[in-house]
Amino acid sequence: MEHYTMNLTLKVWRQKNSAERGSFETYHVKDISSEMAFLEMIDVLNEELIREGKDPIAFDHDCREGICGMCSMYIDGRPHGPWEKNTVCQLHMRAYKDGDTIVIEPWRANAFPVLKDLMVDRSSFDRIIQAGGYISVNTGSPVDANAIPVNKDMADAAFAAAACIGCGACVAACKNSSAMLFLSAKVTHLALLPQGHPERKSRAMNMVAQMDKEGFGACTNTGACEAVCPKGISIENIARLNREYLMAGLSAE
Image (cartoon, rainbow, N blue to C red; front, side, top):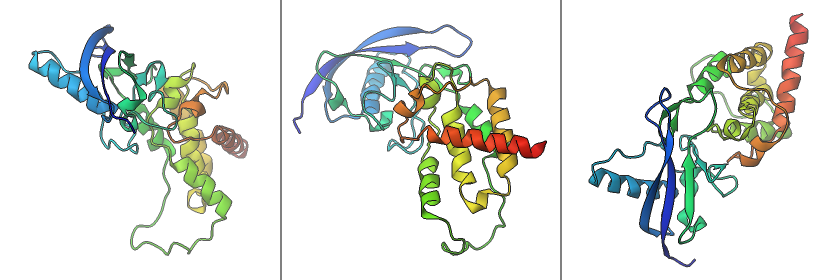
């Protein structure tokens, strides 16, 4: 793969906190290597800003290998940037060429208030999980892996749903700021396995109620969430969530 360097123009959203108005600021970075990670490029810019006595750009990051969901930002109008099934921390600068202008902004949703610059508060996801995203088990020595037989198709579907990293790209891409893909993934991977059955009815009801309380919008099946999900979570899970919710409601009557 050919290595090259580039000069770029960055338009970055700067905002002190959720109470103040923000705006785009333009920066120029030079001699950026095509082998750099996208976040590494922002690190380089921040070093320049610090040397100039300016406030560095605040952004979330942690694992830098696509499993924690922290590096959530809009890049050129698409959550996580131009590559499919990819997080920002996995994005490399070879996706761009010399002279490009890159627009970087945080998630846009009332349920994700801006903390500073590109950082948003996604604790609403945590509260949804607290409302029902758990199972009740006895602690102690782990049981054998084959102690509870599980159909392979069910296990595969549960595993695929459990891949959700809670980054919030689905919410950011949705015109309604709906969290249904996130919620459905969390409900699905527990509902499909025997260990998740005891709380199955209350889980769907409680987690949906908490989602509504947090201010997320309704799902209108546009499919934008699935298109930008870095883990490829299917909207089939939303249909499964709707069935879980309907069954829980009928059994409660």
